[in-house]
Length: 287
Image 1 (cartoon, rainbow, N blue to C red):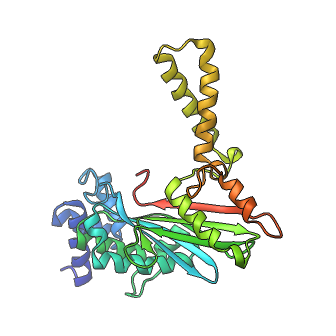
Image 2: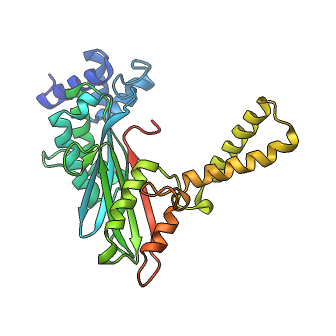
Image 3: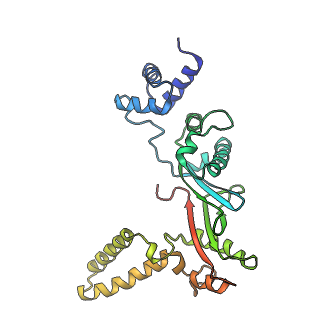
């Protein structure tokens, strides 16, 4: 007869896959109680085409930020619905994960193996939470900003609780001084609103530019424009695309007549303020 722990694992596996008791017990026995391996075992056997909850799209959730001694971490944890994103158990889980994320410097593999306050690993606790709540939950992405060579600033948009929201932006600035520290917060707000995909033209992925160029030229061709002027028009459109998507070249949200690069120059005191790194996490973006 199966012991209590085995029965509990069988129950969780059934909830995750919808497969019958006998097959779930076999999978658990064959894989030493490891739920993740048991799901794969059932899929390979063709018994579970896909784990029901694991295969669904999780595009809601939360982004959490953690700060200590000017080092900053952020992590996106997804759920299927906004209703679950407001669930107390889910939020409590996310808060602890945010602390672990900071300690593990945004290493998702290390986070997964870390033991939580309940004595179980993050991976096992996640499976338990999925079984309890009934939705797919996933640790999607994370990033860590150390406290070297600059000062980190962050901004939380649509804040659910302190340091928890739907959009979080972080920027690291060098040569920032006490009298202009407010600039860091303003740049974070700008990043949250304007969603730059790179710092400058040279950092922009060539594949993105090439794809946009292809789309623009095709659009111009279909509109009846002559081929001899398509190149000129396309060049202008691509230049605008680059400016709109690179942080230093974007119009400053507070004064659109100026670029972000102009604002950095205007606020520099002894040395030129530079953006060392930045990121923006929006819940579900790109899922």
